[in-house]
Image 1 (cartoon, one colour):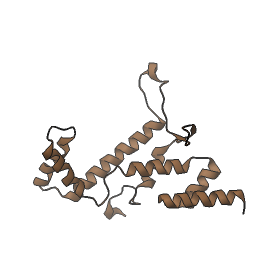
Image 2 (cartoon, helix red, strand yellow; image 1 turned 30 degrees about the horizontal axis):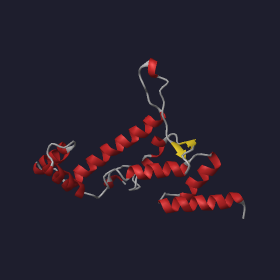
Image 3 (cartoon, rainbow, N blue to C red; image 1 turned 90 degrees about the horizontal axis):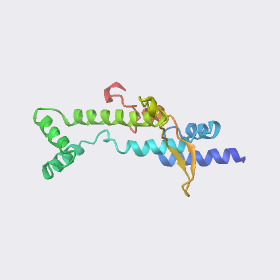
Image 4 (cartoon, rainbow, N blue to C red; image 1 turned 60 degrees about the vertical axis):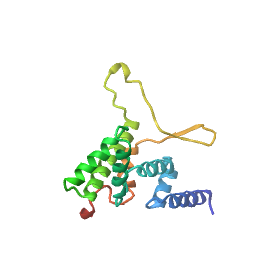
Length: 167
C-alpha cells in the first residue's frame, strides 16, 4: 500500500469519526489541494453545535426560565420576548426556525470576517486576523481560509439551512 493511500485512508477515517458527509472527498481535497479540510470541518462542526438544534424546542423553556430567575441578567430579554411571542400565538417550531436562521447568519458572517475584515478606515486597513491550524506545541500551521464557503455544507441537518418542507 502506498503512503498516499495510507494517508488518504487515515484522513478519511478521521472525517468519518467527525461525522463529515462524503469523508473521502474531504480527505482527497486536503491531500490534493493542501487545504486544512479536517481543521475547517472540525471548526465548523463545533460552531454548528452552538446553533440551536433543528428539532430542539426545549431551548425556549430554558431561556424563559433563566429570564424568570434573573430578569436583569445579560440576555434575559430573550426569554421575556419568547414568553410574549408564545403568549401571542407563535409556535415553538417557528421560534426555533427564527433562532436557527439568525444564528446561521451570524456564523456565516463571522466566518466571512475571518477571511475579509472589511475595515473601512484606510488608516486601519493593515489590521488583519486569521484562523490557523496549531499543533500540540502551539506552533502555527496552515491558514484556515474561506470558512464561509463551507458553512452551509456543514449544516448538521444536511438541508443547508433550507426549510424542512423545501427539501
